[in-house]
Length: 525
Image (cartoon, rainbow, N blue to C red; front, side, top):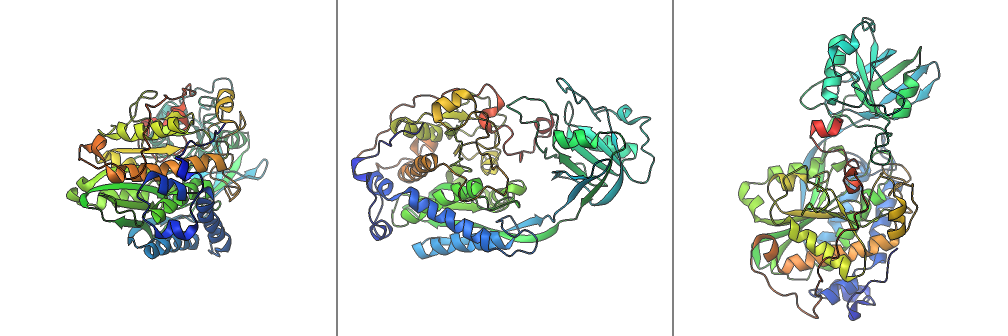
């Protein structure tokens, strides 16, 4: 349960708006006194209005990549930053715009099933028989469905439009799709496994990644329940995956030069939503908190250079942030002292999570850049200072910090949970509802302006601002560059209290929340 924040006494009441906007918020008491829940929510409400007013011909009501709603979000963020005095760059990003696709069961019981287009899919429409391949729909549901060419023998893949139904498990999605097409399938449906590892994370729609394989026909993922329905005798279906269109979106990059232009402190949040809705927690929350921090620090004059990024097309696979980092010259990447990532920081059934850079709870499946632990220590020390329990989230690279860590840039971040379900123990610590997802509206239309927890958003907004000012004055603990003390009353952080250790497995809510990683073996098993 959230406790009262132990902020400096002068920060108990926010200064009037004009005072906050016009003064030099270069101390903890000034900055944290100006960062308010109301200010952050104002930006989230603006994102909601943008979605509501979007008349995009394909995805109205969303702020997804390639839509009018995303373009309006860019305009909103960039306009405020330019007005505050930042040097703002609209960094062009090529994106694939996916039109609505279909997985429809025709017989014996007509139904529209949820689906996700596989990375590496082919395109077109296939209507025909659904042929189950070595499925295990009962008990532990352990299977090797479609992992061997022999799995398809004698199943009748000799018709003009056969749809192979395979189950997640044992081997890569690439193997399953390759074997299915080699056997003669014109389309492939990969259903989720249906076990209960990680609080039901293999029940919902699976998002397959086919690695280097380029399928000839459509390949889609679906849920375990949809797969069971498609597996019944006499099932026929229509799969229609339309070829995407190439469009251009923009990252918003805002910079405030410091005395040291070669020591850049950077933070980012993805600005796009999924196509289903306005994306207010995912990731209007991170975008809004970061925007409010940037606006209130516009006159801060920190020794280190400040840089903020709002990323395009994260929901399509970390497209904007990856394009940005890989597009920098090596000497430009070396100027970035550290990167902090804020993706979902106000989940309505939250826990307070910190990327586990020191691997105290979860062995990282990626190389953790040296210096990242110092970022984690600041987050954890702040939570301890203000009396907030926290837990580790796997340092997995499954959000916009992936390209940064792949290039050796120290990184950290905050996370409050997505579709993993809260345990009774976590309910005791953070309140909320056990058995429900941390974000019950994750990637759904209901991720709207009602879909956040005010307490979690408030404490994380303060922490985001604190960390930016802290590192704006000194990154010495991260990269050894000497810094300065932050002016004003001291706000000394205690030693971190330590994570609560409430995750028995599942990566601290990050193991399957963002299936944008490109590790094929980890994705499929």
